[in-house]
Amino acid sequence: MSDAVIVDAVRTPVGKRNGRLSGWHAVDLAAQPLRALVERNDLDPSLVEDVVLGCTMTVGEQAMNIGRNAALAAGFPDTVPGTTVDRQCGSAQQAVHFAAQAVLAGAMDVVVAGGVEAMSRVPIGSTTAHGPGDAYGPTLHDRYDLVHQGLCAEEIARRWSITREEMDRYALRSHELAARATAEGRFDRELVPVATRRAEVADRVAVAGTDQGDPAGEGPLAHDEGVRGSSTYETLAGLAPCFVEGGSVTAASSSQISDGAAAVLVMSEERASALGLTPRARFHTFAVAANDPVIMLTAPIPATSMVLAKSKLSLDDIDLVEINEAFASVVLAWEKEHHPDMSKVNVNGGAIAIGHPTGCSGARLLATLLCEMERTGARYGLQTMCEGGGQANATVIERLG
Image (cartoon, rainbow, N blue to C red):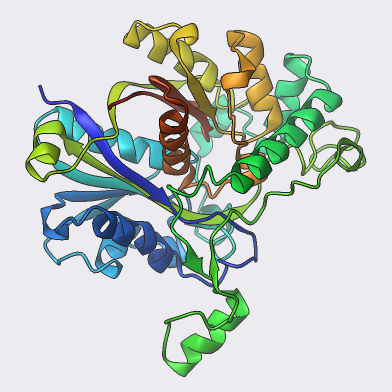
């Protein structure tokens, strides 16, 4: 059986809600890292056997199979198929799993996987806000009292005895580490600068009949827009709770609503060698777990246990961890259960500072993990993230070279 390897992983900068990427149609935004992958690796796109993209709000501008549409917008030949995956916040990580599993099965040799979310234009909740009917149905409602994720984050803090101060200090850590990583150029290899396209400017350009260039005249966005290196603990501690009166979860200890796209070039080791491409890492182990859909955000705990058991590795063997910062309480509960060395965890910040374009984040985390493993000489990296419905993916990769 051939190894499934990562040849390259790229992403756009993550834009703030209504920020410098807010005018990008999701299809065109997703096309940016797809195009960058083939250009950076001098790859004939006709060799791509499938494009698998994650997206959570598949409605409006993100409907009608954005995986296929983005491939066409990227200039891939008509003969390259594409599909779209929805595992909520883990959609892109699941897309990468599907791509790697197709290679491991011997069914394909070259697959592009990733994800996109233009949350400024297709707000979270759009799939249920305007359509007919209820997404869950009466039987599920009879079985579970499903609640908003913000309430889940509050409940996690309560059950694991996580204090407001712990969450605020963790949020501050995220911004400080992301600001340092940006200043030191740690994200440079994974980033594809993208022209500024604000929503109001894009609308005027669309009326004029063109959608090219940088109509805002601000130059390309080459860094993550949400990072606030000047944050202080006192500032964060002064914010009001945003989900429950008298609660402990604030906007600062929650992931940011964002725009972004990312893509990963997955190949069989043999095809990469035949094309003269050098694999950067191999997929070592996959897991997907599920638990209580009401509290919803704690499945990274069993997913981590599952992937470590399958890999026959311990957490001490893992050199770097990327766990998605959906909320600070999610990461801190995971820490209390697994007792990791936190100096190995989210060392360049996370979604609290960088942002969380939901359908994209799984591939964004993988790109960041891969580049940091190369920078530090790490051998094993672990990625995991909570997902709507009480699920989580976990991935172990091994650096090559």
